[in-house]
Image (cartoon, rainbow, N blue to C red; front, side, top):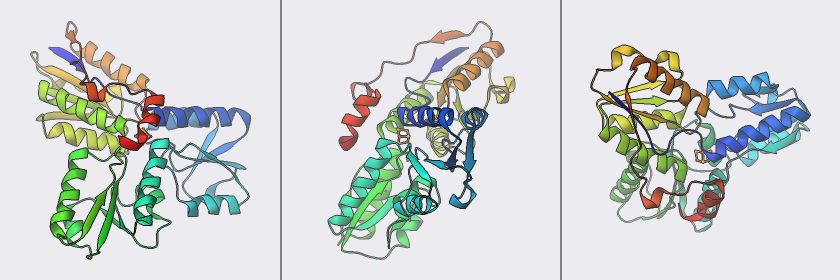
Amino acid sequence: MRIIRASHLGMCFGVRDAIAIAAREARQQPVTVLGQLVHNPVVVGDLRQRGVQVADTPEAVHTSTVLISAHGASDKARGALAQQGLRVVETTCPLVHHAHQALQRLIDQGCHPVVIGKRGHVEVRGLTEDLPVCDIVLSEADIAAMEERPRFGVVAQTTQPVDRVDALVNALRRRFPRAEVRFADTVCRPTKQRQAAAIRLARACDVVVVVGGTNSNNTRELAETCRRHCARVHRVEAADEVQAAWFRHDDIVGITAGTSTPDVTITAVERRLDQLGAGWERVAPEPTPAWEAGSSREEELVTAGRH
Ligand code: SF4
C-alpha cells in the first residue's frame, strides 16, 4: 500500500488572503462576512471563534463593517451595503476581479454575455447581477435553449473544469455557426493546476481521497474530474470520515484537496490514512510539468491576464 499526495492541492492564495483580511479586521472591530468567506466549515468555524459573523443577506448584517468574500460581488450588492451605511471591506480574489473585467471588455466589444458556471453560485451572481441580459450555462441543454445573437462573449466561473469549459464553448460555436463567439479563459490557474495534478494522480492511483467542504463547488468538481480517471474516489470533509473498508492491502492511494481546504484538514486526513495502513510507503508526487510551475501569489497576479 502506498500514498501519493497531488503535486498541487489545497488552499489557493485567494482564499488565504481573504482569511487573513477577515482575521485582521476582526481584531479591530466586529465584522460580518456576506455569505461564506470560503466554502469550508473548518475555516468558517475558526473565523466564527475569532468573532467573524456570517450573514446571508445585507439586511442580516448587524455590524458596521462588512466583508465581501473572495468570490466577489456585484456593484448592486456593494451599493446595497453602502446604502445601509456600512463600511465595505473587499476580500475579492484578484482573479475573480480579472473575470469581471474580461466579461466587461467583451460586453464593450458588443458581445452578448455568456457565463459558463453554476447558476446561483455567489461568484456567478457577482458576475451577472449587474447585467441587464446574460446567459448562464452549464450544459449543452442550456446552450440549446439559448437565443441566437450576432456576437457572443464567453467567460467562465474561475473554478470550472477546463475540459467542460472548452466543450461548452465548442458546443456554442456548433449551435450558432453564423455567430461570432469570443472566449476569454477566466478559469484561474490554481484551479487548472489542481485539476491537472488531480488527473495525473487519479490515473496513477487505485483510490483517490478528495478533501474539502461538502458545499465547496471546486472540491466537488475536483472529485468529478478524478472519477473520470479512477473508479474508486471518495470525498471527505474531515479525517474521521475516511473508512478502512475503502482500501485494499496493495492499493496506491492518492490525496488531493479543493482550493478552500485548509492544510490542517489535509494533514489530518493523511494521518488517518497513515493510521489505517501502518507501514504504507510514501511516494513523492510526480514532477510538475513546466507550465504548472510557479503558483506564488505574485506570479498569479502577473499572469492573471493570460492564465
Ligand atoms: S479558486 Fe482561483 S479565483 Fe477562487 S479564490 Fe482561489 S485563486 Fe482566486
